[in-house]
Length: 405
Image 1 (cartoon, rainbow, N blue to C red):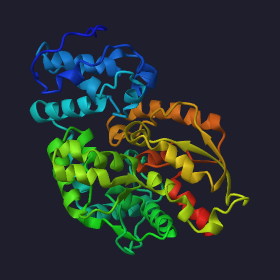
Image 2: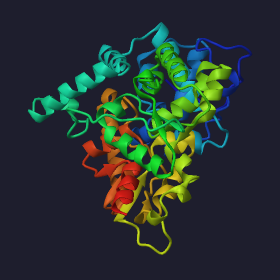
Image 3: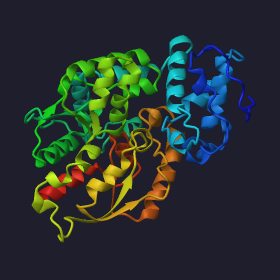
Image 4: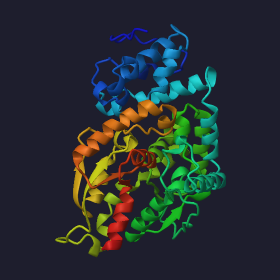
């Protein structure tokens, strides 16, 4: 299918996909997004670019074509990293257009793979998720896992130490997979928060999943159900702190997703842990950040920006700000925030394409010549670790520095 490079006239009313017509026809196909699209970088195909995918949305929305295999493939191969939004001079809301398109397609013409639906259903049941994760961890110890499980942490926990709330100054959103597989990050985050003199109330099983993965898969109804559940489970006016970039981006968007005053008020309370901590660095124990003292972490640390922290929340600068006092050298990668290829379930749905995107990221990491990489998103961290990268969450590094200090 030929992709037009000109801007068509916008129809007066919404079409087949029901998209906002101003948004849908705001792309002028200038191409400035192309270098920032990881799938276009790998394949060079215009249907694997933001402008190409928007052109396909337009012809589909206008009823000029049916849902062809080419269109399905073009949408399925989008990581939804939203790097194009950062690069776009016209502020085209590509993420919203893609999410809405995938939901209509999922609802009317196509089903998400059964195994992904099963997995997404499982993560909304915390006890089942923990039980299944422990079983996988045991199989891991016995070396019984098939290759499909290579993207999970190399040594998943069989038993998990219990997190304990210490008060109710702030909420800490614990979520689903991160709580089951990377609870050590939650322990570190809670320690850092409490080092500022603030008590922590854990979201726990009452808010088991933010719905981000469901939104990306086009399962909008399930995503809205989960969002409503999270909003109801975390009442009050206290800040809701999130240490997963993908979860934080989703929760900050609940106002748009649910379109209610309650949801908008909730989203206003959501803060990425790094942007919250950046305003309170002076509240940490003075001995840990005293002037003229050598940083406790004597390593060259490279920062990998999760897409939903950099391109959606726009709070990636706070990661560097909170790490600076604790590490001897902090370096940026030279790829301008290019996606790592994880993309929620993308690496499982599109393993070959995801691996090629990850190779670009690993090349940038190698050029940085760092001792360690930090990433503020569990999916990114797991996918990079599966590629041989030594990676941890920024909160873990800060907690280590506090303990060493």
